[in-house]
Length: 292
Image 1: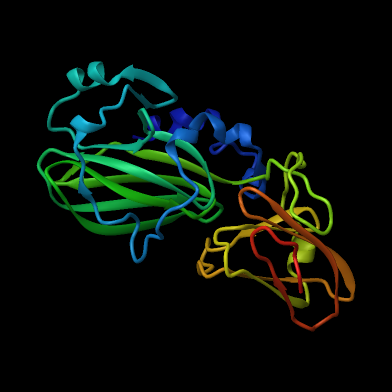
Image 2: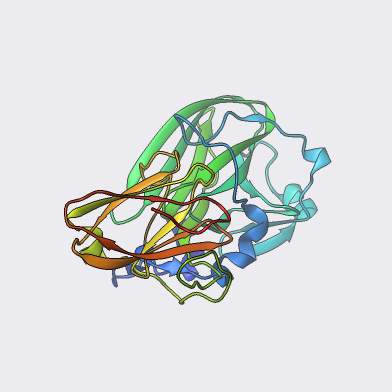
């Protein structure tokens, strides 16, 4: 299993000795475009578990053309199914026409997983999240005999390793590399715009760990990204932040800061002055300029 997990690592230096600075970077659309069929930008939050409740999936109605595994090896599904033992527990990410066991997706997106459990029954589902501080999550679910489908919310930056166990038999591991996405648009102060962004946005910890509290709030947007002085600092509704339209952070007071919100299509930028120690509430709604 360790050898298998090493195979898809050719995209990012997960196992290098050079640290993990790429966790905090924003990545352009070209990083995610090869995997676009495997994720969506909207979906229902998964509450109190790792995945949504598994439901029966009719493979005959949506047979994949190709399956991808390891470091991107491809096989026609008909060839794969003829060579794999019929009683093997399988886990895949469902795409529009293909399935994969490795996906790169932007943070805050949703993926659909397909699990084949030939025996069915009670299943233990595991998620190992590799960041600077690895974490292990575990939940139990009832799997139908045969194919099951469920939703997974990629709401945390890091490498997510997913697998399940039914009848003491583990499935393969699905790997989802989740990163912040740099907007495909640049911005001008005062209104939503669509132009070209900077290549990457590492967080600026000096301004982020400031002395003046700030809260961005929106009635109409969820899962938006927040940038401070040109640097990505977080995504609303991820990393322990409730999916309620509000995102809080702090800045260094008694000076101006550039605040930018990205909703997946448009930027909402504003340069404003922050009085030290006085909380600032910033309201942002889709299709409008940022206002205080």
